[in-house]
Image (cartoon, rainbow, N blue to C red; front, top):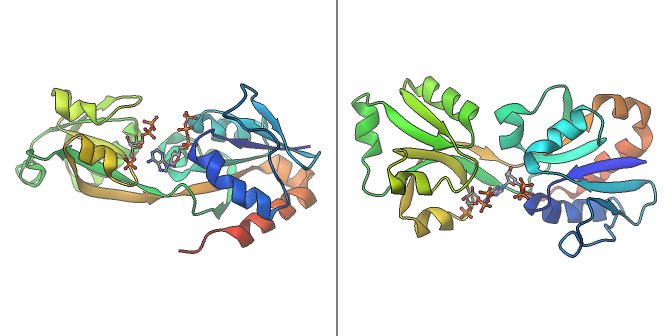
Length: 213
Ligand code: ATP
Ligand code: PRP
């Protein structure tokens, strides 16, 4: 049995075409059931649904053989001992710094002000601001980061941006692009050895179906 860990949102939706290229169709709709293990048209392949930030953990400890997870999740703290053979170029977005439209970020940085930054990505943010020589106090949040500058909780946020609609709707502006993000395939090292042939077939099919920009 090959077990693939996916998160329920964009990653699930955007992995479906790659699975189709490997001749695999998920036979249950995760939006219509509470099931966490989904069967596929291949009796030897199943999908498990986990929180986005738990995908690397499942794969690392062998709860899943393969997983699809964002580069943001991997770099923030979940890439120990994982084989990362493919940039799948799906679920694309960027990690950015944003502030209120009336906040002069450039001057604050130039003057060496200490910035308060709210984010789910404390490790990535610490490294980014340290590399720029900007002093920051980081506040860890788990969602709705956009609210922080609006309520006075923080001067800036570090969050994922794709269409930019959420920033716009909350009168925030993107002032720095930290990095481009896309989803990666991650593979359990032991599974790669023990189930080499079926895993290789899936890797090859995924590789051939990666969207070209
Ligand atoms: P959870 O399982 O924690 O509820 P989720 O179901 O929202 O999360 P997905 O949507 O499947 O998770 O995947 C989140 C990943 O999608 C992020 O880690 C990131 O790499 C990518 N992504 C692309 N665009 C966005 C966006 N606009 N917002 C959030 N994540 C995005
Ligand atoms: C994400 C992210 C931003 C928004 C960006 O949140 O945290 O708030 O999407 O996307 P946009 O640029 O297309 O507007 P989401 O609501 O997906 O959920 P999350 O906060 O649970 O990650």
